[in-house]
Length: 325
Image 1 (cartoon, rainbow, N blue to C red):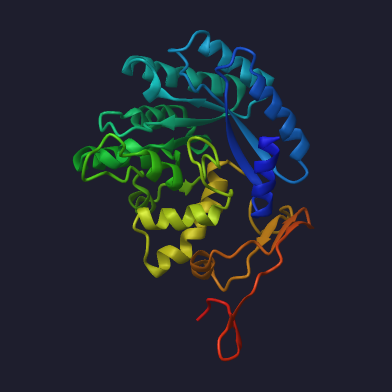
Image 2: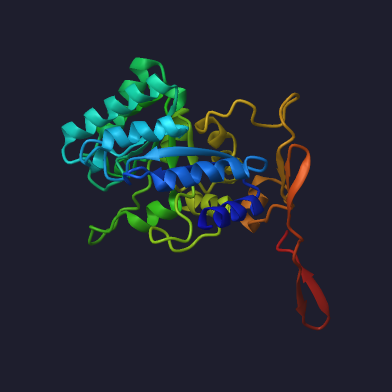
């Protein structure tokens, strides 16, 4: 019921494509089986990608590798990993080799919880990129979070970016959760802990924003509204120029579609009639006023509609306020 409720919030906000990470550390794989049922149930309205996510590690948890493979056999669309959480660096590297091997064996995408830690020595993203480059899988591989990159020294980051660009892998930053969770071991100054989004954009590396958690212990706020995510992300990544804000919608639309490896996304002849209509003049206006999705259209049919609200000031005479200039 919680999953369905969150998906309905997402639908109400105009979201039609979702990637969700399901913990496969449970020997019964109960959560995975339930989410596979949910995926079928919501298919008319949402394309749901399920990541088999080994929350406790692949090599550092009893039967972790076997559980991960069984989750893929059952129907998980994407294979996850969490190398920085494995017991040792060697385990972390080996877990990534196993992840790539499974992805090739079962023809699956990869989405790694990668370097989600403030330790500047956590550098598993280079292994992810090297393996993706070796196997020619960059477009099918995602490194999520990579918050340690915020703390890398400039010399290492410069060398790393060459590999990241060559590999063609995708990145997901999660501004709401990252700014909330990172920097907790710092005194002052406290780091922001969000990965190098601005530098990735400048380097032509595909990066997008994710919500990650919604109204749960990891992130106690949120209504599954990606404009809220974008608003926070533009602030903490210092992307506050007019053009950067106006183009910001790409971080929650086209860049995200590339990360999800969608083949028929966008307004093009022959694609499905899936679109969202916002009552805004442009991307800048949508972000500044946080405009709700007026309509969400799926296969040519309206599946969500928001009635516009109106604020009226009662001063010398009633006056409607639209927050427009």
